Image (cartoon, rainbow, N blue to C red; front, side):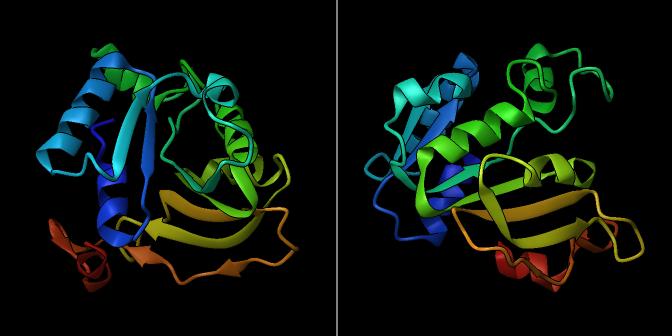
Length: 186
């Protein structure tokens, strides 16, 4: 995408190096320009590449934390955007949820974390994969009276069985007005 996740991570962590992997050349270029615009070249590196080839790009167990905001929709589900780059970002066209979780399991060190945001209806698929033990989960609701439309999950490679379910994150208190929780996060 635009590089917003690595940029936010740089603002919220003391990580010395953050690497973003993006398959689409145009998006990778946009992310690299965002990093330069924010003067974060010393901490963030954007690589254009395919997550399915992550094992050839990076050594096994080489990351303390792996994050992902992958395509949420199975290729045949949901509305299609006339702009192909948005379809690739939103639908499993160039990679699947399994590809993402498999790569994360390969890349994160034992005891390291894999953090993912996805749709709640895919939760079982996420939790069944590759010896990544779910440790924290938080459902995200657009409004207090609406069902969750996202789930944030942290899993630990080789972690022991036990999960903490955090209180829900409500995004809006009313149309266009963020809740205090969201304002605090930003």
